[in-house]
Every structure is written in structure tokens, then in C-alpha cells.
Image (cartoon, rainbow, N blue to C red; front, side):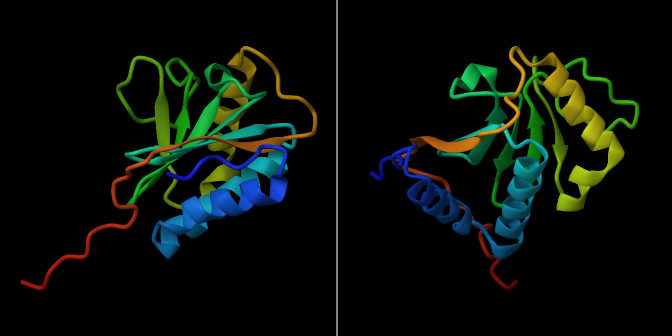
Length: 163
């Protein structure tokens, strides 16, 4: 089992996260990498908490190292990337973008990274940040690999056999 990189070793952490992303199809990996770049540029003080879990790769965004303080995340599956709002229930959503039936969370299917620049999605992100327990620091964001599952589901969709 691989262990998380030392959070103080920025280069090793980035290499490790890029390795997690590279396990997905090129289309999904490109969307995740571009989405991370947009979110990190827009929120320079954000801390990325990375979980290479059994079912999905999750990259949570919040003010610090506590998982409980994460505001939203990218949930990466073989066929989808979701922008998941942890305090999603009750967020103002006049465009009706939010999906899901969970008790707390809602998500937007990130079919194209350009959605992150749509005013309605920016408004959802801003509303979620307004509800955060703690504000984001103005700078100094970092990436921390929190966990790596010993076993994972396939990260690429299974190819279909010809009929």
C-alpha cells in the first residue's frame, strides 16, 4: 500500500495526486486537472484534501486540514466528475442545477470544466463558501493527501465487448 506523501513536500504531493488522476481515462483526467486549476486559481487560500478511496477519487476544498470543514469537492468516477457541495441542501439554486437526494449534500455533474465559469455555478460556490464554518484564508493554499485505499475499483470504464 502506498502512503501519502509528506504534506510539506509540495512536489512529491503533486506527483502523487497527478498519479491518482492519471488512472482515469484521458477525458476524465483532463477535466479533473483543469477543474483543479480553475478552483485553485479562484480560491488561492483553499486547502485541497485528497482521498484516493475505493469507489472514487475525492478532492475536497476547504479552509484547512479538517475534513469536517470542507465546503465542496470534486468526486471523480470512471464516467463522471461531480462538483459536490457538502452543505448543498438549501443552497439558493434558481437555475435548478443541483442534483441528489442526500441529507446534506448536492452536486452538479461537471460535464465540461467551462461550467465552473458559469455565473450560476459561481453563485453556488460563493453561497457554499458563505455557509462555511470558517472562511478561506486569503492565500497559502496547499494540497494534502489524506488517505489512499489499498484496493480501488477500476478507474476507467470497462470496455464493451462487440456483440
